[in-house]
Structures are given as C-alpha cells and as structure tokens.
Length: 112
Length: 113
Image 1 (tube, each protein chain N blue to C red):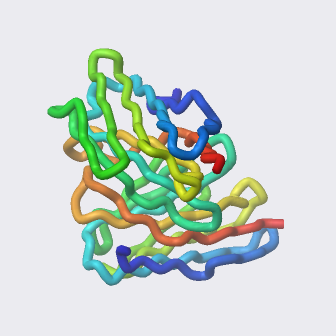
Image 2: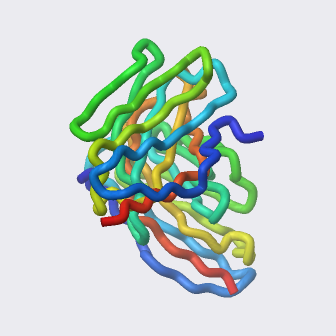
Image 3: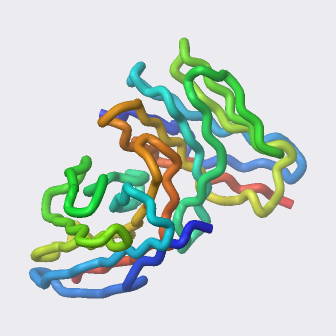
C-alpha cells in the first residue's frame, strides 16, 4: 500500500469555524489531490498540487484553499466551514499526471 | 454535465458467476481509464487500468474491455467472490495538462454466497 495518511480521521465542527485537514505521504510522489465523496456524486476533485507551492483548482474548489510547503504534506483548509461541506475527504497521490492515483483512508467531516 | 457515467447504482450477483460493471463516457479526448474498488470506511483502491491503444486488459479475475467507438468500458470479474462486494468507480482522463481523473458515481456490487 502507498504510504498515505490523513489526519484527523474524524472531525465534528460548527458552522463558521476554520478547519484544516492534513495529508502526508512517504512515497515522494510529485502530484497530490484532494477529493470529496458525497452520496450520488462519486469523487469530485477539490484542488490538486503538481509540486511544492504549485497548486490548482479542481471541479469543486469554492470555499476551500490548499497549501503545499513540503513534498510530503498537502493541507486542505475550509476557511469558514458550512453544512454543505459535510463530506468524506480523500487525499490521493500520483507520480505523474495522468497516472494511477493512490488514495488515503479518508477524513469524515461533519459541520453542524 | 457528467462526462463519466455509471448508470447502474447497484448490481447483485451470485458467488462464482460473472460480474459485469459498465461505464460510459462522453469526452472523446479521454485516453486513459481506470477502475477503483472501495470498501466502506476505506479509501478507494486501484484495481485495473487500460489505455486507449488497447481494447482489453486482464489481471487475474479482473478484465477491462474498452470500446472506443461506443465510448464504453466494462469491468468483468470472473468468478465473483463475496469479498468483491464493494463500490466500484470508473475513472477517465486525457493526456497533457488536463490529465486529472474524472470519476463516475459508482456501482455497488453485492456478491451473494
């Protein structure tokens, strides 16, 4: 299995609070991705990174920001969480793009 | 506008029989296709892939077929086992800077003993 961890694995927060999710990899892969999975929607790309400090928006980027200061870490921030951001968030990595992506275990976020 | 469609939300199959999961796509620029399997409370795991220069790829019990003219791919699992019960996602991408994966909504496969 690819060395990808996500933290926290579960989080409950209140509307309007900031939240940061962390993805950490030990594979030295160049590309990192954040997805959200919702019933009836499959996996949707939020943001991705193609190198340190290099990021770009995905399909559903509104309300989210990301940062990548080191190869191994990719952070997803919800500046002011809303109930519509209640979801399961997955991080993924790949060596190239396009290429097979390997996923982390996910973070279940509930915004009350 | 869905570019990758999995029109069957669920599929039930008897153990030992063949499972066929289907996926349609609309973007003729897609040239790389993947299947992922996902168990509850876990991340998706890569299963098998195929590039557009091929029409078939096999890996053990899993075979993916690609029909470019119909913009259709399918995953065959033979024989199906209860441990195959999971949600299966189809994904597609095109080369170059637009190579991000586009996922279908998934098909839940139940293999009954």
